[in-house]
Structure formats: C-alpha cells, structure tokens
Length: 326
Image 1 (cartoon, rainbow, N blue to C red):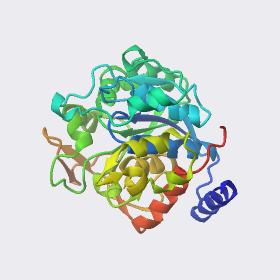
Image 2: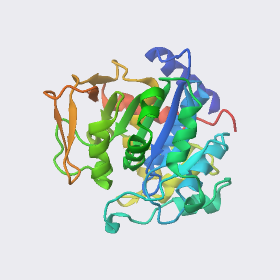
Image 3: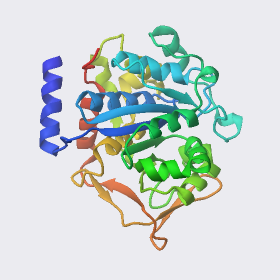
Image 4: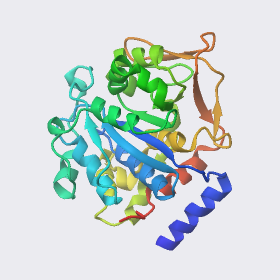
C-alpha cells in the first residue's frame, strides 16, 4: 500500500511539473474549530512538506473554539506527521459573528483527548499576531506565502499592527472565501468576520488570489482515509464529522480548504486553474462578495481549467499519503 501511494504521488508530481527548487514557505491560517476540512487541509500541507514542496512556518487559528482545543487538535496532526514543534497561535478575540454561529466543534476536543500533542488550551497558547510576527521576521524578504481558510480576523490584526512587515516579508496571500464572480448569499468564511474581510481586501499590500466556495463545493475528499491507520487524527476527524446520514469518513466531504492549500503551495498552475484578470473583491457587510475588474488591484480569483474529479484525485492522494517522518 505504502509503495503504491508513493508511486502514485511521484507520477502525479512528474506529470504536473510541480517539482520546486525551494519549498514554499507557508503560514496556515485556519478556523480549526468546526469542520473536518481544516484537518484535511493540514494533512495535505504536511504531505506537500514531506515531498519537499512546503516548509510549514506556523499555524494560526482564527476562530474561537468552544472546546478551547483548536491548537491542540492541530498539534495532534503535526505530531502524527512528525512535526510536533510547528508554532501555533490562537486568536483570543475569536471571529466577530454572533455567538449563534459559533457551534461546538465536532472533533477538536476528541482529538485533543485521544491523540498525543504538546499544546496547551487555546486561551493559554501564544497569540496569533505574535506567532505571525516571529515567523515573518525570521524569513527572507518576499518569501512567505499565507494560506487563509476561515475568518480573516488574524489578517486584519496583521494589517493594522504590522503593515510594513507584510510588505517586506509576504510574497502572496491565498484565501478560501467568497464566491465568484458574485455570491448568491453570504459565504461562511467571509461572514465570520465581514469587517475583517473588508479591511483585508481594501488594505492588504501584496497579491491576493481568491479561491471561492464554488471550487471546493464541486469536489469531495476523505473516503481514502479509511485506508489509513486508526492512529491517524485526520481520519478520526472525518469519522467524527456527520455528513448526511453517515459521516465524512464514509461519504467524504467537500474539500474547500484542501484545494486552497494545494494552490497556495504550488501556485496557480495553468493546467489546473484559470486565473481571472486583475480586479477587486468587494465585500458587503453581510459577507457577500462581488468581483469587479474596473477596480484594478493586485487580486485575482480562480476557476477550473481541469475537470474537478482530476484535481480531486490529486488531493486525495496527498490526503491519504503516509507520513514520511512518522
């Protein structure tokens, strides 16, 4: 099984021409509190790191976890993949959406109890802004990619307190959020903290690439985790996440965040994605989004240039790949 998975990954890499001279230095900003796709996205990120394509500098959680265990849950995955010392910060403010949206996590508390990790409760972890500062200051200029999946609260804090540090150190920001070219209703990640999203879209000083809700919604991942060991916390997170009349381990789950991690590490591969002309994402107060090309900013969004099932297969191979460092 391991040999087969490794061979599949190598073939995928060669066929897509994704070998990189240097790994992508990346900070993962995630609402690791409610849905299992954040766990899946972190697994994909670790698999890409195992392939030498990514260097995970830090993780910042951007949504208040009712179980007070978002950092611990992320740390169980870091530990499983042999990287237990990745810095993790938590947003002490939490997202600004009313509390009725802050549903209890389906998996973070259980992961923290069932799997090894070295994290403290969220309210005792370093603040996300401090973790960002340390990670960015330690890296060469213009070298860091940020992948944001969830509320943009941490990025608002970064814009308001460390604007020059962003300008100096960040290469690009990849966001899973919104719907393009126009959302039919408020999109969850943006609506979690619409004010923060407005600040980021108006003030962020580096290129932004948007991957909307409509991308991950057309793909389903997670079933292959049934073939991974039971000591895999990512497998467990999918097992704990109800989906229709079953769970996400059996039925899979839309892969919103997983697809964004893939793009953040490998860039906008033209064989996979069509990139829009430069424009501007306008965020409404309710979390709705609309794209306007008449406002020329260093922002783009992507749509499919390959059948979603083929991209889904690339992601599935990464999601279920055995840890290289375990």
